Length: 148
Image (cartoon, rainbow, N blue to C red; front, top):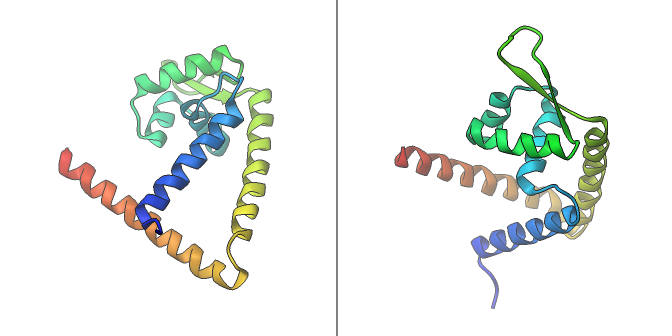
């Protein structure tokens, strides 16, 4: 019996989460904390409100994550250069190295996953996967709007 599309997507999500949990085992990092690090890696120094907006979570939620990341030596808070009331969040050098390693690991994993699809099918597979992701995002946004 073959799995349906949605069941396959759930399985892929589950496997990715298991892989992340394995990668963070024995560290103070969690999926949510790494999400903060990814935002800072891609956007550079940012306020907590900017990080919260990027992650679509509350500033209070980000504050707890940043407290933990600061305590583990992954993030530092620095004064904002133009707003006395704000602070900027920045990656520490250790966190910067970690994120660079993660980017390399992601590229290796992506190549391995891409190789699972026959070369002649890759373009169609990627277009289909992009279409599914786009449609799922539209459905989530529509549902979010209906609940608000």
